[in-house]
Image (tube, rainbow, N blue to C red; front, top):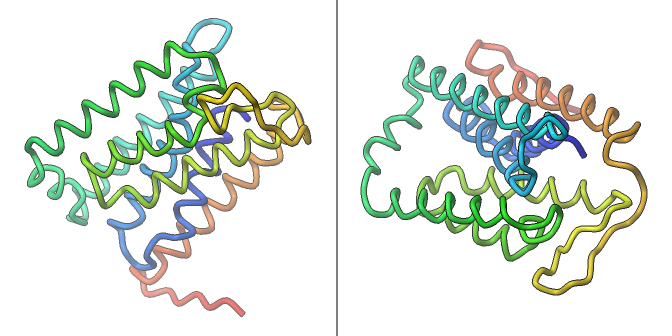
Length: 207
């Protein structure tokens, strides 16, 4: 699937497990889900032929800036947590994350970064750098792998094994991608509204 689709679905999946009525939880879900949803595609080098990769990274950067600005405005606690956590663990986590991203950028598409090994490595990095974001990042990353498994082009889920896995149900750039983008965007909007509704005195009941 394309970058915007992975971001939308990753964010929606993360918001599905977020805490209702908590700005902090929603900020973590949006940032963690969208980052986890797209990081596996760090094996695509942004270029004229892959403008989607660059666009996706810019979108995630914009989402993160907006989310942290909202967190700071409402005093939700995410920014304070980061400032209070400055130290060897945070630096180590960032270093591991950057190292894995660098390795991924020098591997074939849908190989290392689309594996369970890479997913575990990135999750360790997030755990070290910013533990509260881990469940949302994991959810976003998992959504990426699941969606890519439906494509005709296989992914090396069990890397370093050479065998690729794929269900061959759809193409990454065609109708299924457009449908999932719409579903992910709508789901993200509705889930965010549902999670934050109590803060505005709105009670939403399901069923």
